[in-house]
Each structure stands twice: as C-alpha cells, then as structure tokens.
Length: 247
Ligand SMILES: Cc1cc2nc3c(=O)[nH]c(=O)nc-3n(C[C@H](O)[C@H](O)[C@H](O)COP(=O)(O)O)c2cc1C
Image (cartoon, rainbow, N blue to C red; front, side):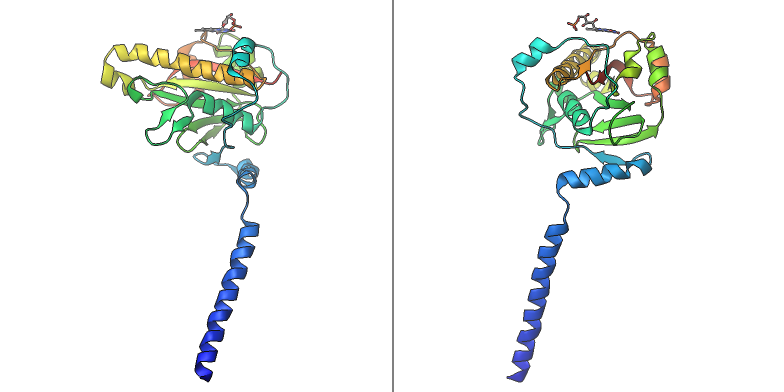
C-alpha cells in the first residue's frame, strides 16, 4: 500500500511540474511581432544568406481599390523619413505575394503559372534594415540578405541620373528569368514575361498609393550597368526599377 502511495505521489509531482512548465513557457513564448522585432534587432549582425521574417501582409486595408486607382500618380520627390518594414513587406506582397498556397498562385497573374519574376530590394533607408541588396522569397514571405552595400547614387547614375533612385527609402527591382516562361511557350514567352511585369508593377504602384507612399516606374537605365551594380547573377534580367519613398 505504502508503495502505491509513493508511486502516486511521484506521478502527481511530475504532473504539477509539467503544468507549471507549460504555463511558464506559454508566457515567455514571444508573440509573432516580438519575434520579428527581435530578429530585426539582430540584423545589425546579419550575415549574407540570412532570412528576415517580414510582418504579415494586410489583406484588407483601409483604402478602396477605386481610391487607390484615383490617387496613383508617378511621384519623383520624397521626404527623408525611412520606410518601415511593414511597408516594405506590404509592397513586396502586392507585387508577388502568395495568395493561394497549394499551387503557389500570386497577387499578379503568371502565364501558365511559370512565375518568371523575382523581386529584389535595394535598401537605402528602411527602419531596422541595413543598407544593401535583398531578395524576396514569396513562399516564406521573407527577405534574404544578399550583401551590405550603399549603391543608391551609383544606381541613380546608371538610371540616367534620375535622383529618385537614390532618394527613395528602397528601390524595388523587378527581374525576370525568361527561360522559365520561354521553355514552355518559346519566343512568345518573352512577351508574356513583359506582360507579367506590367501586372506586378501596377500592383506595387497601387499598393504604394494605398499606403500614401510615392513611387514611379523606371524603365530608362543602362541595362548592363545596372546589372553589374546589382550583381544579381547571369540568369536575371532587370526589367524595371521602382524607388519608393515617404511623402
Ligand atoms: C514603360 C515605362 C517606363 C517609364 N520610365 C520612366 C522613367 O525612366 N522615369 C520616369 O520618371 N518615369 C518613367 N515612367 C513613368 C511615366 O513617365 C509616367 O507614367 C507618365 O508620365 C504618366 O504619369 P502618371 O504615371 O502619373 O500617370 C515610365 C512609364 C512606363 C510605362
């Protein structure tokens, strides 16, 4: 009998320890935003290849689509305030965010769902991010840090001295891997890639309007110079630059 009481006491003790541990671990588990903020605090020591978790995109913002369409304008002069990580997250999502996990469908249509577009970001002035080049990973909704660098002025010069490229908090780079689409559609696939970049960039344009930020699409730049400054890799063709800044 004494033996059973002893075993019971041991189980009761283990039970109490388990409950206390569960409650205390629940209270110290960071909320998603705290996790993101903590990761971003560590960005100061970010090394290439690291992935930065982006804040959840908002799927039901305050401004109507009609209002954003009415407000959309090419804006080339920005204030010096930094962009926030929330704004960068929202802008990337608008261009290429995943809206149907199962098949990887996105905010912009894609010919045969071949998804030839890749988004890169040149950070000039964004809260919590180092100046440098980043690559958007839509499936994880994360930014991969490629390298630390300050290329705003150089990039502006390659864009025929359009100073807004250096003035915006970030420059969103639309690049394409043409083969993803031409492998399926042949030469016509090239046209589809250009069509697609129009969809994605218009999304970002409207999203910027809805966030009350300024942007403009930039097609006038020296391709080879821009690609050599960005060093994205041979497989990428840069098709558009969109500086985004505060107003
Ligand atoms: C393919 C294309 C390339 C463009 N390239 C540039 C550019 O390099 N620099 C610039 O300031 N604006 C550029 N723009 C923006 C146009 O100048 C702008 O859309 C036009 O003046 C109409 O103004 P809105 O966008 O405010 O309606 C470009 C627009 C398109 C569609």
